[in-house]
Image (cartoon, rainbow, N blue to C red; front, side):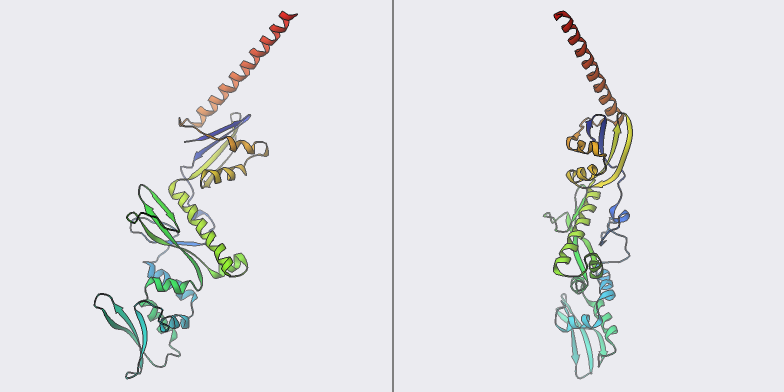
Length: 300
């Protein structure tokens, strides 16, 4: 459904963008969005098989081996512990089975640990659940969840949806602390909040794309198209302000009088209708002038 405004000699037509750009492919984004779904390919391109592999990669890239070992030694890992077997003179990595309600040894390493930190860290990461891997990753990354609601179309956000049946965790959007420092000069609680706001904004932009809140405009001077632009994403009020910035100074305020055209008329029909109205107004003015002249003659 087009929206139309006229401020002679200009006519602005705003229409849905039927071939919108994908902001995850075309824009220079601050964050990276990693999504996992059996039926849909969403977010940024990646080759991870699942959440565990994804967060393992983040930890391996940025978290020191000793921090990984300390995490489990301090008892922070769910269902996983590192214990020293004095009789065997070796370290044992044990995992708990919810099914059998028992602990099982997954990996052993002869003492001492020094010099084998990388090997032990890799063994720990292989056994960790993604929730613990995510917690470790957050030492070096800002990470927000991405939720999806799938019902007569797709919509996403970072806060979740009230319907448990058609919604759930889709993935995550993240940015490294190094990139936060590049953007804001330092990594502090304040700059982390700013980074999270940017990440949330990128998810909103992606939601606009998925839900079809995509627009373009054409600007006409009389019947001649003099400008057009596409790729506006967002709620209409935000789009309205963005379009305004692309218009000539003499007609920027035309966006304030945009109105819906419920008849779904084509642009050609709209311009023809406007021209007919202009011609009618001009003819009415001429008739008014003639009547005025006749009245003046009768008075004389």
